[in-house]
Image (cartoon, rainbow, N blue to C red; front, top):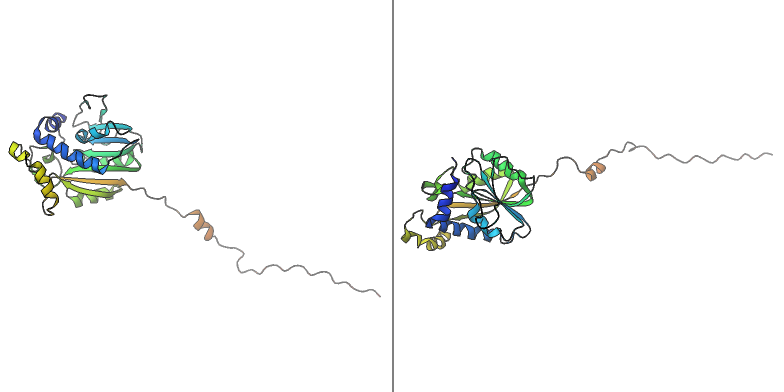
Length: 254
């Protein structure tokens, strides 16, 4: 099930709870990727709430939004960088993206395996992808009034397993959004407290999981040239070396 771009925009940009979530997620993303100078940074799904810090830093920023969700112009105060794409076929050259954020993209995908294959294709050597998905055991995935309550939530183990199958290597994991998914102002005022408190309580599940993964490049199969040279059979092995011919014997003539 896909979210509607208008609903996503209203939540993150027009509601106090959404703006609080945006601030929390953005702080974690910039902590994981503090420097993107000279890199191409892209987001798939609805990643614009956390892409903003890269606009003036990265070499290029792209906001890829899937067709069933819809697209909106972004950013509003600069040249538009958002584009509507097919979920599993992006108009991006192979190996073109250095950093990719997938937010409200994987859990709502109709074909997660095909989507991960497309992410693998477009990610360049040394590239990294950051998945932001609802936590299955958290409170946010049970609240249909927020975007985290739509789609297929994941546990940490489920997501790591799926990434490894598709050729990714999980590098960093993080849980966040410990505040309650309620819109009342008195609860919103306690948001910062719950975030600090949740980090120190292992059994308290965050509403969102962040996993940074790298693209695993498999070596080409086949024997190395050096090994092949060592393994060559010596067809002359075991034969004695030829002896030099004897000098002709001189016969004395009397």
